[in-house]
Length: 207
Image (tube, rainbow, N blue to C red; front, top):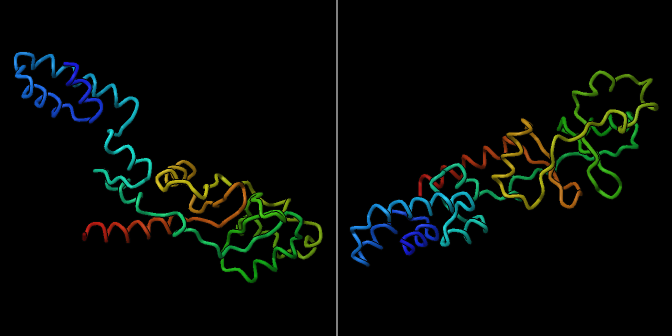
């Protein structure tokens, strides 16, 4: 029974532990105790780790392909490949006039706010300033620090993709900034992830 319990817990294979132990020892009369011990060992180890001794190293490296297809495909996506860097940066001390000048040469409606060291301080959404961006009397009075907004969350540069998707689900955001030690790197969009996901899934399914 000790052999079956250890094998079931270490390998995450309770049925194999039961039948292999019974076959090796000839202890078929202890089949019911083997079943109970193996089941208890398996469900106990599940409370501490979802991986067996064989799959733990692969899981830590992010290379484990599981029966959960969504999570398996996400392990194939790399954050570097979905970061977008064509957003125009603005600074807290910039005036509304300077902000309008930046908007005029940008094809985005989202602007990261950074300090002179490149540290992310917030964001400016075009929709939030649409009602004041044509009021020339406010150009010298209003500054970015007055109308910038806090980001709902940030994505760390080295974060695995499944955790990135968890943050998107919790914040209901479509675009989130990517930072490394607080320094702005770019943005990642949910639509870009979905496009990459479909492309990888199509390739994964065909293989």
